[in-house]
Length: 255
Ligand code: PEP
Image (tube, rainbow, N blue to C red; front, side, top):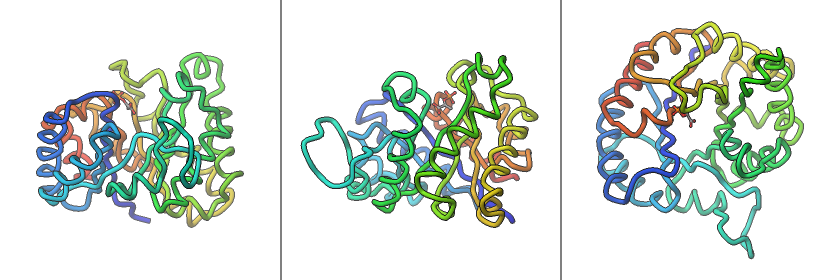
């Protein structure tokens, strides 16, 4: 099944209001110029609305959040942002389970699964991040880690939920390090993830977009995106430079 590539920008805790507006406009212009690639921008949550407005004005790219509360509804949850709030700000996607949150905010597999479910309950498309640490890879545990992280979400929401979800393979050792997975390493992990989904439903597995994330740059994007099971990228550092990011989007459009 042909899958429309998706390239998502994760700005993390970067930009100012002014920079976010400028960057969003430049990215939207780049997205509008490329056919058949979905582009998503995930700014810091305080900039969701202005970035959404800038993207809409330039007619390019969708809006996403970098995280979402696992709690549905409203209540006394200081600092949390609900899926409904992200939707209310114009968001359509939400990253869940980014390794930085797993590592520094104590988000375990069960918590990530609840966030995935909460995002979908609000009508958002979750971008579920999974990936092994270097220690796990060196210990030959990559497949087991991916199966465990994906399995926790499958158990919580069921395979049908993946018809409206995105998965991102993000090896922790490749994030922000300048050391990307090789195209072969990425393809092997993506194929494993798709096979895990296919064990429950082959048709849904075939339709799910699996993004690669981890030091993707303009000069290595094309070879990563050329892999059969790599359907785009989740981009951190390189998404803070419109020229770099737009070149990555263009590379996705060529596959
Ligand atoms: C990320 O944070 O999801 C990421 C992939 O970062 P970078 O592109 O900087 O490695």
